[in-house]
Image (cartoon, rainbow, N blue to C red; front, side, top):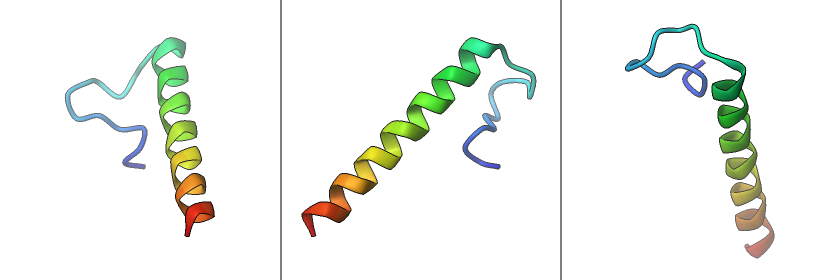
Length: 39
C-alpha cells in the first residue's frame, strides 16, 4: 500500500509513526468528505 510505505524509511516503524500515518489518512478523508459536501 502506497499510503503506509515510505521509500526513505525502512518498512519497520514504531507505533508513533503508525499513529502519524493514521492521522494523515483521517485528515485526507475529512478533506475529501468536505469537498464532496461542497459540491
